[in-house]
Structure formats: structure tokens, C-alpha cells
Image (tube, rainbow, N blue to C red; front, top):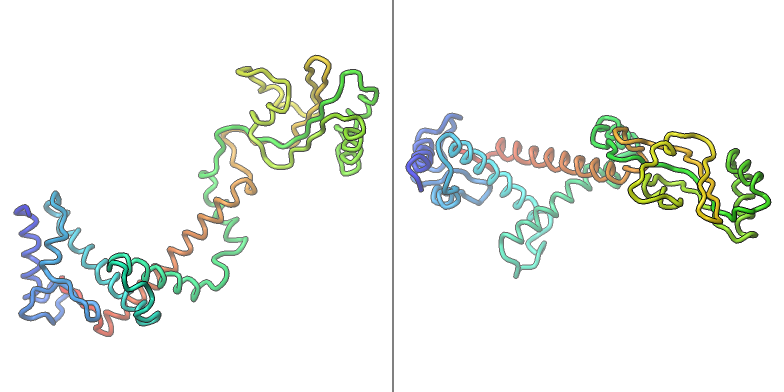
Length: 287
């Protein structure tokens, strides 16, 4: 251990003797103990063993404070979990560190169920998160919805087909699909957001050629590939730089809100457990 860090650790020993900046009576008289949580004690030698080799100066003091605080919190949670779930909460053959991780994670889940019940959020929570964090959902490429039909160039009902593609309602959709089935050609409606290059792949486009004009046009457009004619419509679009539609990122939003809510609940319950332990003298920090 380097000299600066050793001095920081030795200062803790002096703190123990004097009661520390919190001016608490030292309950560890005659012992080189830094903190207690229930029946568990954190000794000075334990801290020395955990100190990072390269840490120096003020960083070492901050590290010590954080380490002791985290140690107290972790041990309080472990003891609370053992009290709630019993000694058989995990496989007795697991190593101690793994057992502690499992049982405290189980306590976290207990906290969440107790506080949130069956739902961590509602739809308004999701929309609030989406609207507040719109910058996280900026598109890096265009996405579209639309429809495409490919039919023989000499198809006699071509004009009617174009009219249906232009009006496009439930009745028009049914007529187009029936027409495609009867005459053995392809009609496809893209109802879910699709990246523009994927949409272009449904058409007789050429690789490495730009089709920005088609993206910016409205109404029915046409392409041809030999004896096959393609009609297509881009009904909705979002371009690069715009915010992605909510339905396209809804699962990401749900995961983000759930993760944040879980963390908030765990932190609140952990803080409550910590404060009560200090008040009831079940935990003592002597820094």
C-alpha cells in the first residue's frame, strides 16, 4: 500500500478514537472496526485489503467513504433479506458472494412487488418518457409506410387499379387484393414502419442509385421492369433527423421506463432501510 493511502487509512483509526466528524460516541473502543451493520463488522484490515493499489490522495479518502457506506447498505439489505426469506433462501452450497448476490436481488424484487404491485408504469408514464426524451429517438435514415402492386404491362384493368391505389380505403384494398389473386400478380400493403431502402427493394430499383425524388413525392408513382409494371404509394414517411414514431420505439421506451422505475423503488427502499438502521442504532458508521 502506498504511503498516501496508508495515511488515509490510519486517519480512519484516529477517527475511531475521536468519534469522527459526526461526533458520535465510538462503540468500538479497543477495536480496529470502521462500521457495523447488525451483527457484521467492517474491520480496518478488511478495508486495507480492499483498497485499490493505484489510488492516491483525496481520491483515497473519497473511496473509503463510499466503500464503508456501500458496505453498510449491502449488509443491511442482506440481513433484511435473510429475515424475510429465511436461511434457506438460496442453495447452501453456493459460495458466499454468489449467495449474497442472489438473496439481495430477491429482496430487490420483494421491494418492487411491494411498492409497484403488478404494474411498474402506465401508458401516460410511457408517453411522458417518450416526449421528454425525444432526442434519444432521432432517426438516422428515412422510414416509410406504403403499398406496392406489380402486374403485367398489358393488364386491361390498369386504369381501375391506379384509381383504387389512389383512393385506398377498405373497399379499395379488398378490390385490389381480389384483383391480384384472380390475375396472379402481387399486391402488398406496408402497414408497419419500414426503412426506405427496404421499401425500395420491393421495386425494380438499381443498387447505389439515389431515389430521393420518389421519397418526396405524393400520390401514385410508377416504375417498370421489362414486361412488369409497378405502382406504389408512400403513404407516410419520417426522414433522417426527425423523431421516430412512438410505435416504432415503444418497446425501448417500455424497457427504459421499467428499468428506471425499478431503480427508483430499490433506491428508495434501500435508503429507508439505511435511515431506520442508523436511527435504531442497528448500523453505526464511525468515519
